[in-house]
Length: 404
Image 1: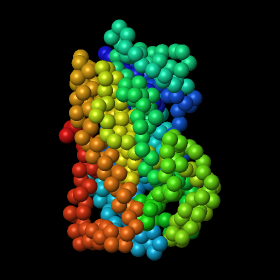
Image 2 (image 1 turned 30 degrees about the horizontal axis):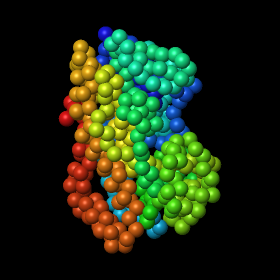
Image 3 (image 1 turned 135 degrees about the vertical axis):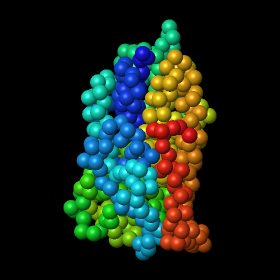
Image 4 (image 1 turned 60 degrees about the vertical axis):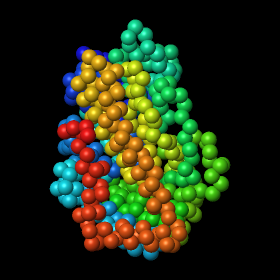
């Protein structure tokens, strides 16, 4: 039975550990660089393609206890609030795809995964910062900043957008600043006027900006993300501020959205803190693996957040990789190549689709805005089934049954 070393204890790393345990592996070790394993205070959307994996791992009861179930997606104009288009979620999603669409607090989801991993006797070590990798006597060795090391039959880098494992395999990447800066915040629902926030994920589209909000934690909190195209793009280059933990000056987001719909300004005013980070883009990688080392999630396919699929892709990766390790236990190198072969076309498509989605949200030219709104609105109102079919490739994907 092979020994598995997972670098990174986030959503992708913990999901992989659980999937490998379910696949029958016993020697599973997770190395987290932080002194404690914890999730960020942000919201997350889990569409049916991801929730089916977590439910297959036995987590439905735990997820149901912490989730909010959105009833719809609403697309609105930035100032008047005109409803351009909508599509159903809720029971519709379960009927169409067989699994729910969840809104969650990231910290809540992370805790569910951590509790399940500990209950499954996955070994989790904290304060372990990967510095380099090397191969010795047929094993992959992870070297840590503190001078310690660990050897495993296979190593998976689940260490996020600034992956040390990716840098060791492929060299440091060169991300491009998109010119977009994102704000996020969280507001207790009881601070807001009743009925202000619909039980839906709502995206407000405007020239050079957009704003998204939705409930999390059973409806107790409202999560929001506002994205702004900034002037002086060059001043943000190479700043490296891709962390969701950097607190920003609330006065700046107030100014960025001061003339938007009153629902948005009211929501921002109610926030105690706002966090700000620069959005960088990367092209799909030509390969993810070398020898018995591979990558997962943001470490190999970081994507812009405009399709809300970053965590979902990592969760899908985890299931597929665990089954490839199971099927190719005697030929791990080949199993990792098979994992790439199945996953790269899909994650590439989502990466590029997320990039295009951001461009559509930010249209400013009146004629292009009218064309976009007509296209979205016509499908939503008159051809709803056709409109929904456009998302079947994404939400209907079932890696639990197969890897196509």
